[in-house]
Image 1 (tube, rainbow, N blue to C red):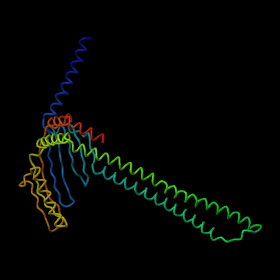
Image 2: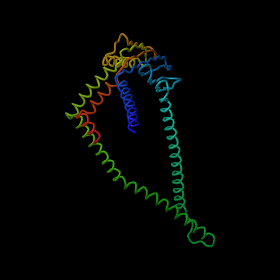
Image 3: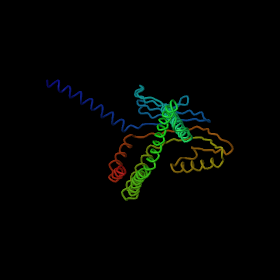
Image 4: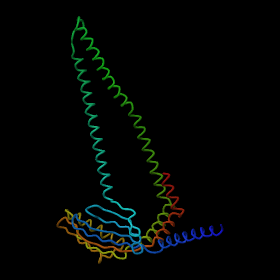
Length: 309
């Protein structure tokens, strides 16, 4: 019995050792990412990989026939794959169908209401224009009785319409009060949020998080980034503004302008170019810095304060 228990404990110990070793390897053996892209007009071809130890783990994003696809492979076996653009397109199509159905239903309801209103007012005009004598005999009296009933029914409809209009007018102050209450609620939330953003605690949390994120960026930034891009818009001034924005962005993230070349074309609308990217990172560095941000007291206080707003 003791021998069997020792064997079970030995197996559990081996499994735990394997799991811990694998976790440490994933944390401290770098992931490598690289990608390439080539574009000419609307034709774009590209692929981006994140891999670990000779593609034991591989996550790939690529385009094929206009769709952006992704796949996750472990030991070469696909575990997760799909399309990014298909989901967006299907959601957009479904939304358009729903809006079309709603618009059709609203149009039909409006047409019914217009027809009903026309019937009621036409009936009212007929009643007002009716100058038939009151004292008649036989069939004419019976006809007058039916006309009176119809007129009464039509008057009831008109009265109902007038009542609805009156109720709508009476309801305006209540609607105004509700809108005002909602406005006051959001106004108070904006004040509380502004107070948090101006607080010393937020400034400390922002500065600390910014320093950590800069460290993470410096760790994961590509060691190789090269591109040759030629672009132009229909309006030359738009091309100039876009070039200025790119120059500021490249200067901010410290991209080598000799390897990342951008040529503007002020004469026509065009976009073509190619580029490559390569870099590596340790998952442990990202995880450790994320834990530092999460457990920073000022950061947690600010997050909880924003949640309560």
